[in-house]
Amino acid sequence: MLLSKLTSQRLIAHHRPTFFRTGRIAAVIPHEKKSNKAWLSASLPLSQIDPQSTESTLPSILALNESILTSMHHAGLPWWATIISSTLLLRSTFTLPIAIYQQRSLAKMIALAPMVQSWAETLKVQIGKDSRDRGWSYGTYQAELQKQYRKKVNAIYAQYGCSRYKLLLLPYVQIPLFVSMSLTLRHMTAYPLPWFGQTAQSPVQGLDQGGLEPFLDLTATDPTLILPVLVGAGNLLNVELNAWYAKGVQTPRQKIMTNLFRGLSIAFIPIAAHAPVAISLYWVTSAWYSVVQNVSFRIPGVRSRLGMPLLQAQK
Image (tube, rainbow, N blue to C red; front, side):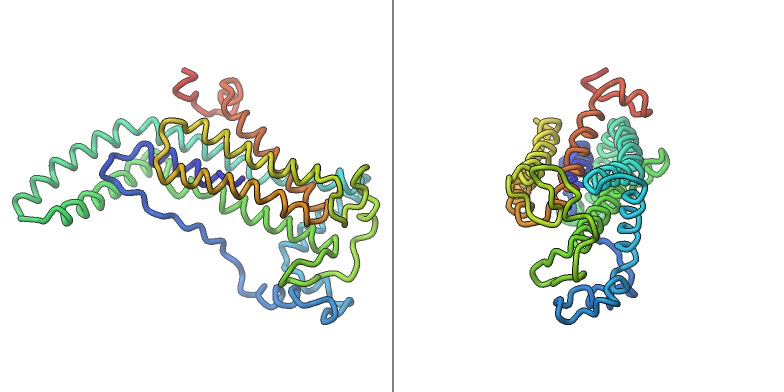
């Protein structure tokens, strides 16, 4: 999950000419202003929360998540299976189709790389001539070159249906989903967090006995540390897989980002160790779902069945 956005930027950067400087892309998660009061109320300490109005303080998305979990549990699944099944369902419904669509768009961008590079060389000559005729400085030449290059590349990508904004669709969906599900489970387990307090007076009925041995109580932390280690291992494996796929084409900045994500993956271990088992179980399932997805997308048969072009090394 952590590398969805980074992987997209790597592939784009690899096919840019050397004069094009990579700009920063900021993914801002929109939110409704209506929920501000709800979040403020949900952050109050337990002593200041009215038990009768606890549910009404939850933002609507968290209430929706909780209703999905509760419905699946009432259908006959134990709580541990409910958390795993809902994670697989949500990832397969919301993030998997976008990931497939993104892979197709990336494949188109890679196929268009020769055309883009050809236009880059053409623009160098044209703008270089204009620069000499108009007496531009080197800085002005570079600025105009980048401006014209971006305009042309965007036009080419738009013509072939692979605009760059499509590469940001996955983190725009996956990050809010990850955060909202984590907060939903935190509310359902009545687990307090620093600075956020407690949003429920008691856990949802059955969660304290809804797990499997040796972590039967889903509202408590994992005493074995098995789940926290699996969370860190899954995230780190995703980082290493993406680093291996991009071996030899990473820029120095991308290598720094890879090391940063490695550190974040390891940092997830102590974070998960202090979270209730319900949240750790969700994190484990989500992380290893990403691992399976990452590996599957490299298999020629899977790519062919999903309508994704074969990678260069597979042709």
